[in-house]
Structures are given as C-alpha cells and as structure tokens.
Image (tube, rainbow, N blue to C red; front, side, top):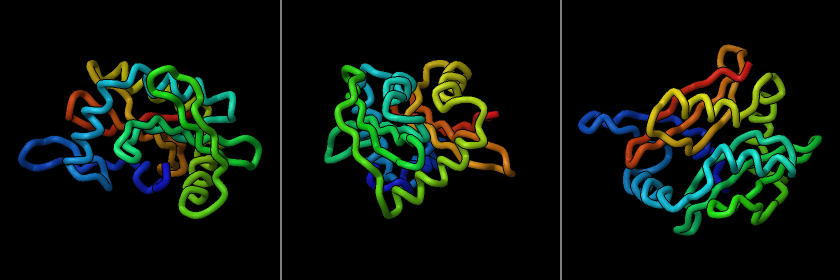
Amino acid sequence: MKKMSALVMLAFFAISSRREIVFGQSEKENAQLANALTSAKISLEMGIMNSEREGKPISAKFEMEDGKLQLSVYTMKGSQFSEVIVDHQTGRIAKTEAITGGEDLASAKQQAQAMGQAKSSLRAAAETAVKANSGFRAVSVTPLLKGGQPMADVTLAKGREFKTVSEKLN
C-alpha cells in the first residue's frame, strides 16, 4: 500500500461497458488485478482476520505490487500503524512494516479516526457486502466518515467487473 490514495477505491462507470473502473487505475490495471485474483486462495476477509495479531485492521486491499498480487492490511496498535502483507496463498503474515510518514501515515490516521467510531469490524463489512452480492469477492475495504457516520467502502469483483458498495460500521 505505497499509495494510499489508490486504497480509496472510488468507482466510475464506463459509459459504454457499464463496467466500473477502480479510481486511480486504468482498465488495463483492473484487468491485471482481476486476472491475478483468480490465483488468490485467501479471501480479503481471511486476510483481515489473520492480520489481527498485528493490531486492529483499519483498511485492506488486494493490489498489484511490482507485477505481483499482494494482500495488504493496514493495522493500528496503540498510536502505531503498520502495513501487514498477508500471503494470498497461505494466509500467513509475510511481512509487517511500520508506517511512519507521508501519505500512508496521513491515510492511516484518517482510517483510524473512522474505525474509532465504528461498532463493527472491517471484516464484518466485507462479509456483509459479499453476501449481498452473489458471485462477487471483496477486493478492498476502506473506512471513512460519511455525514459523521462510520462507513466502509467495499470494492467487489466478479471476473473483470468491479463495483463499490458502502456498508455501515455502526
């Protein structure tokens, strides 16, 4: 999660295909992500659960990093933030790295603020979104405050089709 701005998975509908494009990514990048997701044996929800030993999950996403699929979860423990890389094949934690500055730290602080008001977890929000959207899998989940209420934007994928839904966190 080197660029947290990409984590805020806002979606735009492509007029001709009615296919959503993940904000900050080209259709080619979305296609690469969709193709790579077929190799992931671990769900986003499982990755979030497995990262909990490193702290409270405050966002999570599958992403392409250096041409390879990666499952990245931001966590918070006390006032410290970390990026936890979960192996998308085994579910084991592959690496944990402190978030100490830049856009990543600013994003982590915003996410922590939203999660501080949340009564339910990111994993629960992702599970709810998946259950309500048959055939889709969660690709990312990002908390935010909408009208002062904690919400989670959950990006879902089915093949090369992406869509983002909002779930309440209270």
